[in-house]
Image (cartoon, rainbow, N blue to C red; front, side):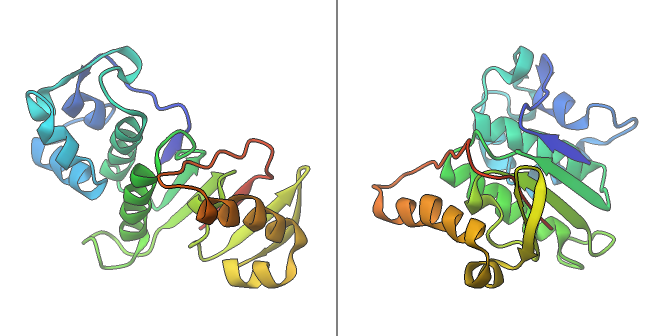
Length: 191
C-alpha cells in the first residue's frame, strides 16, 4: 500500500473513497478500515457519516482527515508493506499523532487481528514523524550517512543531531500547538 503527500480523493462518498479500487468490499470492511485509521470519529460527525459527499480532491475534509481516509484505503487492502511518502507533511500535530497511533497498531503482530508483522517505510522531512521508528536512515544530499534508532543516532550522527536541534528542541521552546515544517532538512525513512 502507498500513501503519498498529495492525497488522491474523488468526488463521491467517504465510503466510496475508502473502498475505491477494492471490488466486492463490504460496508463493514470499510468501517473497520476507517476505525483502524482513526477516521471513524470525524466521519460520523459529518452530515450523513460514511455517505458524506467529498468534493473533487477531497474538498470538505481537512488535510489530516484526507490523510486518514487514504490510510484507511491502504489498510483495507491489508498490505504486508505500507509506504508513506511525506504522508504527514501537511497535517497538524494532533492528526500526526493519530496517524502514528494507527500505523503502530497496523504494523504490530497480533494486535489488530491481521496477518502479523508488517513493514512500514516512512519517507519524511519532519523528524517527529519518524522518531519512534525501529530504524531511521539519515540521508544527506542523496546519500545515506547513518542509520539506527533515535537514541543511537542522537549519540553519533552529526546530521541527525542537527535535525534534532533544529526541529525538536525548537518545538519544545515554542508555544503549542506547533507544526514543524522543515523543507531544507534531509529525507529520513524508518520502519
